[in-house]
Image 1: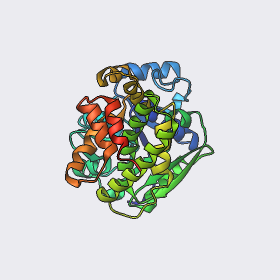
Image 2: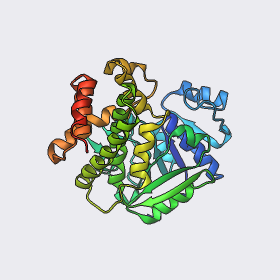
Image 3: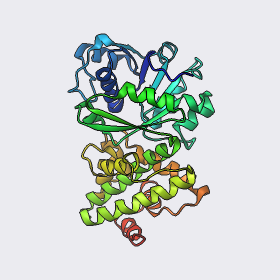
Length: 334
């Protein structure tokens, strides 16, 4: 494996993050791309309108540089590198349509979540079920909201891989005037942090919806980064600085930003919406909802003290009243 990304890259997914990354790829390089989207009607609308008809519709594309297909096997056969950018709850069903061998492909995971039911981060899931060697896998994480990436606002991506050569190749492929890339070898640590920051963003949203105030929110996030560090240190031992942008920075932007769907989901619950009503109101997936259950189940074995995670699980899955649970959680803070 030579870590060369000069071959065909396929964007896999049709949501806002996939759209932003596709735009970034086209900005950074002159190469064309492949793009897998599940629905033919969305592809037809995209070609007609020159933009994604549902997500980031203000961002125009040169569609002559894109080969669209709703056939995941066709795209996966042609492409040398698969860029996974679909919500984690749908990853398993999308990949379940594969009948071609992808073990020889390079994989870039921009999935900001964990695979439900399996309770595996994407790198581990792809290794176990699709036989993709860890040296062919790259994970990509923020702090990056799709909306700002698409608007070409200066952002930073951390590129994680066990192969420095492959990480360098991916970093070069995405580096442009509006995007800086940072390399890391902390693959699963980055993935677990990406799951947890969504959980904590829901907590932040609940506090916001309850009008809990900035003072308490600051204490919440101070405790959240310690809780993240404690869990990731046990789940994925290794050297890392939890204050790096891929951990603390991503936690902050996801917890504060108006673009954060997890924060917005939590805010509705804090305002009195039921979990079901908040989910129905959301137009996009709040991955922290699914991540809460997955990490909670993983932590049954690891037994890391995680009062914020436990609080979110009680609210989201046992339907306990948010005000009462938040106050019980607050009593553990320091």
